[in-house]
Length: 276
Image 1 (tube, rainbow, N blue to C red):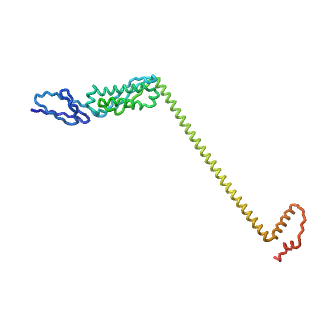
Image 2: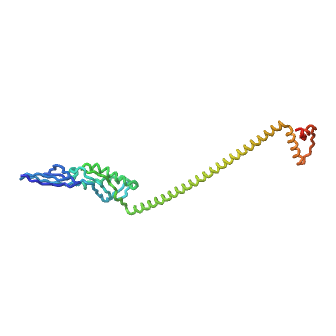
Image 3: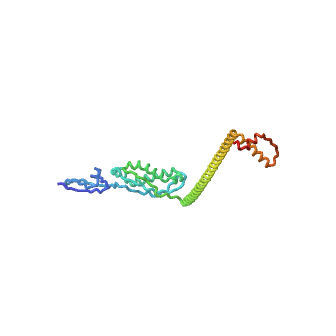
């Protein structure tokens, strides 16, 4: 005669089947049925293992840094069971083991660092703890997903000093920002002045060019006029005599005294218009 007995494994869990205390196999989520023979003495037990991601808080513990400063650090560790049989069989309690491994990893790391280095990069603590604990945790079927620093507490007098340092840093940063703005304003002003001076020089250069071109044009016109007059005088000598007379008249107006003799033919050539 046979008797049936059913077991249901919830979703997100793995069942570990034991018969007479011996591990038989894993049971996936769902319904599992077992057949019993009459008078068969088999004691079956099923242990449920939660396979979901969970977190574990490692409460603050006092640790001495490399420069002998006592600090208290609390960590938050996220983990997930990857191998249910290993998590149950290899350690008495995998959660307690995670707690201990994280404590020791944090202690070893912080004891090797000075306070300034710890304050400059808190993520370094998290990364180091995760790397160190992950290898050990894989041996009992647990994956360490991440580790975060939850709290970092210092002695009271040290907190006051740190607050003063932070305030000093904020003031120094504000002064630096103000100095940068002033330097930028001076730079803009200097650039503007340089641009104005350059434009002024360019305007003066253009004006000089225009003046030079105008003088060149005047000189060209004078030269052209002189050439035309010289040509006319060479063709008509009487024009030269007229120029001489005009020059003498100008000199006479200024009080000059002189005597000039003309040949009759010269005067007649000048004033005898009938011949022309």
